[in-house]
Image (cartoon, rainbow, N blue to C red):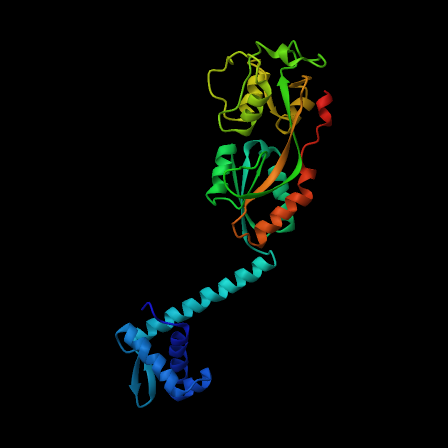
Length: 308
């Protein structure tokens, strides 16, 4: 029954309710001939009669009752769809898929929580990963938007920055370089560095910074896939690391980590909110985009503590 129409389905309901073609035609404001034609086309499509023609009027057959039940179900689905669309217009519903690089997990959940307080009916799906996986979600339409340090360039995106993203060098508090001022980068030669995995934005910043300086292989015999692991390894004395300042604020404030005052640091990047240019963005994703640009900066950790 691929060719049935809403008019045909509504004809079945009207005839069932009114009992005659003439009365149903009056209800639908069509001619009896037009209504008869609709019913005939539907019965031909179904391959069986939908009504018994009796002296007491038109009565639904078993097939007719199935079609009427389907009509009722379709109407309920459409009513729910209309309600959902109205909810989207008023931002009392909808969904936002957000991909964030792992470094952003230190502030993004707080920003998302603030957004949901403004729009409690909006459903949030949060994906956390390194730069490559975040870009992959954005590229493959797995997320509506992303929060990251550097927008991709291999497919069309719209991006806007909303705050500073400093990167610093951290060491255990008893490290020989801790407390020194204006350390030349050349003094880092021979230091054991702990670095993030290939594909992470932090790894890219490190390789750009350390270019030309020979460093030791870290004593930690695994590839470090998270900022948390790196922080713990640095505190344990296994090496030093270049990380986002936003990932180590608590540890520096509590003096579990020290910030090394190296020439050329901090490296200041920017945080961006990014979305695909050609993707249609509904009211909920658009509201989150505007929210991040308007209020995102207040959720970024302040870096006044880097004096410690």
